[in-house]
Amino acid sequence: MFKTKNAYTNLRKTFDMHERCPVCGQKYELETGFWFGTGYVSYALGVAFSVATLIAYWVIFGLSWADNSIFIWLGVNGVLLLLLQPWLMRISRVIYLYFFVYYDEDTAKLPESK
Picture 1 (cartoon, rainbow, N blue to C red):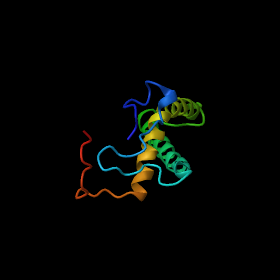
Picture 2: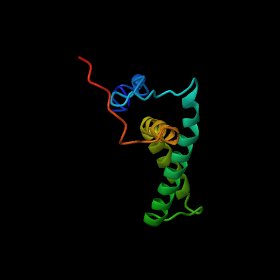
Picture 3: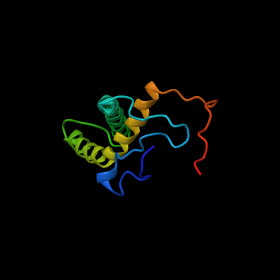
Picture 4: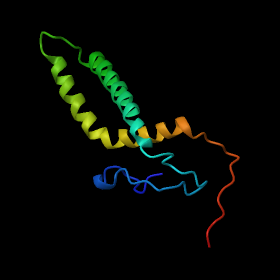
């Protein structure tokens, strides 16, 4: 789906995608501005990740306003979200595309070009 396998090797080309699927020929950008909706998916993934880290931090270290440990969690969570952002944005494109294009294993594969 993406031209580079690793989202972190070249951040300028993180979102470079093929125009069509190399296997079935499905066009990835269904209409102009199609990918704007991925912001909502990325936001939901970020919130889910933040809730998961909050629960993990609460279970492992405990949270208290008295010792400001919540601010430590906020800092760690913010750094983790920044580091995971290229991956989160890529996976949000995949999830968003799955909302509109359904997988069909009976779809014929494109003939190999000679």
